[in-house]
Image (cartoon, rainbow, N blue to C red; front, side, top):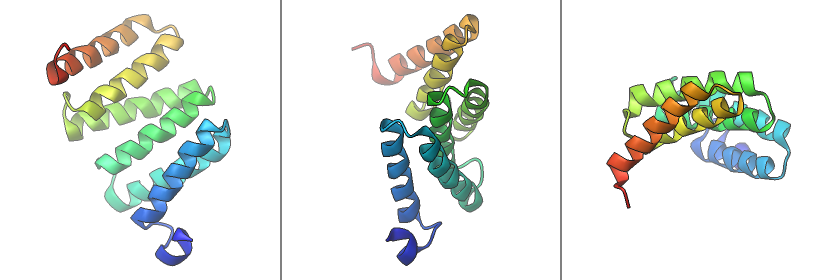
Length: 135
């Protein structure tokens, strides 16, 4: 309904597509979720460019879908892109940047890249402690 009345690249259509992708991912329908996340990412990138918060969020969601499907090399590459973009656009202390560092660290940990995972976990932990406090 959204797509028919608002168009495929309208913000509401993309928001609905993103929500459906999240639901499909929870339902273990990874390929369908990936397809929708990729569509949202492509539209956001076309609308806003690569260095926009909405585009970076869409990239992170796509990365997570790939990670969940076990496509670790692809996911790692996109997680790295999302983290670098968020550092550039939002800054190193922003909650979304710290979340991106944690996601990449989790993937690297699972792949046995322990030293790099540790550095990213520490970055996320120290950033969150500075931002949120120790409590």
